[in-house]
Length: 74
Image (cartoon, rainbow, N blue to C red; front, side):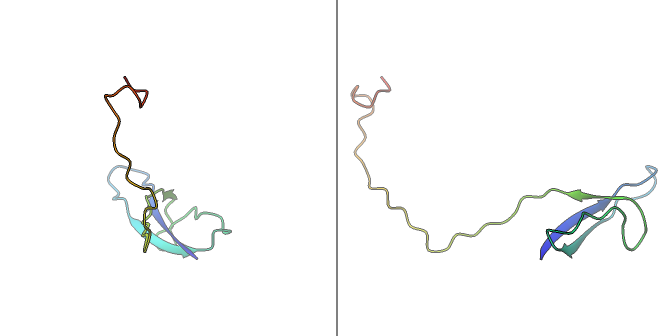
């Protein structure tokens, strides 16, 4: 199950926006209304968090040839 962030879409500028998280299956349709207030909601697109563990670079250090004309940049 994924955790999605939603925010209410107020009908007037006097009503504050409420953000909340809810766990849903990816197969479920997005919510249309806040389960607590009944206001219309929209799903908020947020960046995820990725953690890489044990990844090591296999690229060998190459002596720079930049400026010599051999690398193609000059």
